[in-house]
Image (cartoon, rainbow, N blue to C red; front, side, top):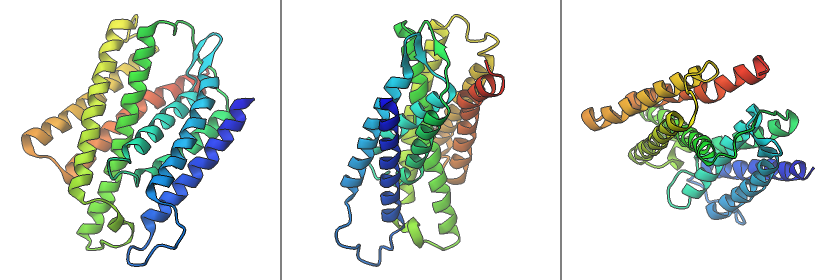
Length: 273
């Protein structure tokens, strides 16, 4: 029952922090802000409190008597929780708080779906430490590359506005394109490194990564790895940037989305396994 109350509190705080960040992002910089407005630090702290209540909710839905529950909506909630945590913590030292405008609402939606549609898919042998590490590395890799994908979307909007000589609106509140692009590639590099560890741990610790129920996820994950690795190689070798980098980033993320959430949706929701 406690997870219901903590989930509602997390939903409200995520919504509030997202709206406050949106207000800052879309605020006309030529006009002074209204007195009494919350600072960036205060808004981030509100978001972090939401993350804490989200974590309490996840604790009660993830850890069950039979092992670890990674049902579809619980897994979705876990991923959005980690994404929110990473974005908010990184905002202390990097100008990426604008990502929270788009990502925090996803966390609030995910925790709502987790409460409305409780899903159960328990891994009985999850007490094995190596399997826990594999799952956590997979979730972390997906979260980092999800943030990179949202960063690439903002970069695409920024590029479009500048090409059309319309640099106004919220575009003026974003960091320079070079900074945005550098952050995106840093996220991709870190995400690819964690994805590599996830795939290696899967080969070592899973009985058969190419078993019938895992083969689609495995092949799609490897394909996503190839896409992101090619992007980083192209960046190093040919200086890929701008629209080319954005297309490769979104392509890799789409494949990874199919691997992680697409396969779970088909097996658990559509097929009921």
